[in-house]
Length: 109
Image (cartoon, rainbow, N blue to C red; front, side, top):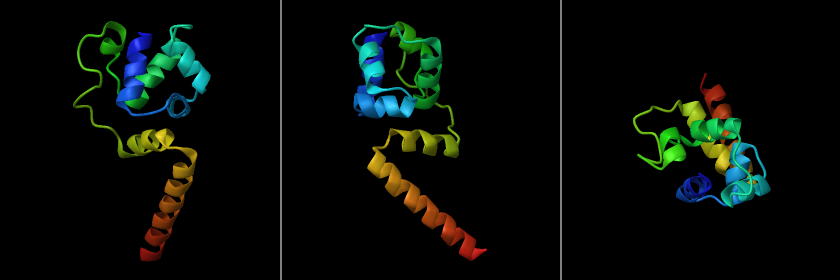
Protein backbone atom coordinates (compact mmCIF):
# COMPACT_ATOMS: atom_id res chain seq x y z
CA UNK A 1 0.00 0.00 0.00
CA UNK A 2 2.88 2.39 0.72
CA UNK A 3 3.81 2.44 -2.98
CA UNK A 4 0.22 3.32 -3.93
CA UNK A 5 0.16 6.18 -1.40
CA UNK A 6 3.36 7.49 -3.01
CA UNK A 7 1.72 7.10 -6.44
CA UNK A 8 -1.26 9.21 -5.28
CA UNK A 9 1.05 11.96 -4.05
CA UNK A 10 3.00 11.96 -7.29
CA UNK A 11 -0.19 11.92 -9.38
CA UNK A 12 -1.25 15.06 -7.49
CA UNK A 13 2.19 16.55 -8.18
CA UNK A 14 2.82 17.31 -4.50
CA UNK A 15 5.95 17.10 -2.38
CA UNK A 16 5.83 15.01 0.76
CA UNK A 17 5.54 18.24 2.77
CA UNK A 18 2.68 19.61 0.67
CA UNK A 19 0.88 16.27 0.68
CA UNK A 20 1.26 15.95 4.44
CA UNK A 21 0.07 19.49 5.06
CA UNK A 22 -3.04 18.83 3.01
CA UNK A 23 -3.75 15.75 5.09
CA UNK A 24 -2.86 17.24 8.46
CA UNK A 25 0.34 15.27 9.04
CA UNK A 26 4.04 16.06 8.81
CA UNK A 27 6.41 15.32 5.94
CA UNK A 28 8.07 12.75 8.20
CA UNK A 29 4.81 10.83 8.58
CA UNK A 30 4.37 10.75 4.80
CA UNK A 31 7.98 9.65 4.32
CA UNK A 32 7.66 6.88 6.90
CA UNK A 33 4.47 5.61 5.25
CA UNK A 34 5.90 5.81 1.72
CA UNK A 35 9.06 3.93 2.69
CA UNK A 36 7.03 1.25 4.48
CA UNK A 37 8.54 2.01 7.89
CA UNK A 38 5.10 2.45 9.47
CA UNK A 39 1.71 1.29 8.25
CA UNK A 40 -0.86 4.01 7.63
CA UNK A 41 -3.54 4.18 10.30
CA UNK A 42 -7.19 3.75 9.41
CA UNK A 43 -8.17 7.41 10.11
CA UNK A 44 -5.38 8.54 7.78
CA UNK A 45 -6.61 6.21 5.02
CA UNK A 46 -10.19 7.40 5.39
CA UNK A 47 -9.12 11.05 5.27
CA UNK A 48 -6.80 10.44 2.31
CA UNK A 49 -9.62 8.84 0.34
CA UNK A 50 -12.06 11.64 1.23
CA UNK A 51 -9.72 14.56 0.64
CA UNK A 52 -8.05 13.29 -2.52
CA UNK A 53 -11.00 11.26 -3.86
CA UNK A 54 -8.87 8.12 -3.90
CA UNK A 55 -10.60 4.84 -4.71
CA UNK A 56 -10.28 2.84 -1.48
CA UNK A 57 -10.40 -0.49 -3.35
CA UNK A 58 -7.49 0.60 -5.54
CA UNK A 59 -5.57 1.82 -2.50
CA UNK A 60 -5.93 -1.55 -0.78
CA UNK A 61 -5.53 -3.87 -3.78
CA UNK A 62 -4.10 -1.94 -6.72
CA UNK A 63 -7.16 -2.92 -8.77
CA UNK A 64 -9.32 -0.39 -10.58
CA UNK A 65 -8.82 3.34 -10.96
CA UNK A 66 -6.68 5.38 -8.60
CA UNK A 67 -9.30 8.09 -8.22
CA UNK A 68 -13.06 7.92 -7.75
CA UNK A 69 -15.05 8.90 -10.79
CA UNK A 70 -18.50 10.42 -11.20
CA UNK A 71 -18.76 11.56 -7.61
CA UNK A 72 -19.71 15.23 -7.64
CA UNK A 73 -17.60 17.17 -5.19
CA UNK A 74 -19.21 19.95 -3.22
CA UNK A 75 -17.63 23.26 -4.38
CA UNK A 76 -16.71 24.20 -0.81
CA UNK A 77 -15.05 20.83 -0.21
CA UNK A 78 -13.18 21.11 -3.50
CA UNK A 79 -11.97 24.63 -2.65
CA UNK A 80 -10.77 23.48 0.75
CA UNK A 81 -9.00 20.44 -0.74
CA UNK A 82 -7.24 22.61 -3.30
CA UNK A 83 -6.41 25.28 -0.71
CA UNK A 84 -4.84 22.72 1.66
CA UNK A 85 -2.58 21.51 -1.15
CA UNK A 86 -1.18 24.98 -1.84
CA UNK A 87 2.14 26.20 -0.55
CA UNK A 88 1.74 28.64 2.39
CA UNK A 89 2.57 31.70 0.30
CA UNK A 90 -0.09 30.71 -2.25
CA UNK A 91 -2.57 30.08 0.57
CA UNK A 92 -1.99 33.67 1.74
CA UNK A 93 -2.57 34.97 -1.78
CA UNK A 94 -5.70 32.85 -2.30
CA UNK A 95 -7.16 33.95 1.03
CA UNK A 96 -6.53 37.59 0.13
CA UNK A 97 -8.34 37.10 -3.19
CA UNK A 98 -11.31 35.43 -1.46
CA UNK A 99 -11.56 38.36 0.96
CA UNK A 100 -11.58 40.79 -1.96
CA UNK A 101 -14.33 38.81 -3.70
CA UNK A 102 -16.40 38.83 -0.49
CA UNK A 103 -15.95 42.61 -0.23
CA UNK A 104 -17.10 43.08 -3.84
CA UNK A 105 -20.13 40.93 -3.19
CA UNK A 106 -21.04 42.98 -0.11
CA UNK A 107 -20.81 46.21 -2.15
CA UNK A 108 -23.21 44.79 -4.75
CA UNK A 109 -25.92 44.10 -2.18
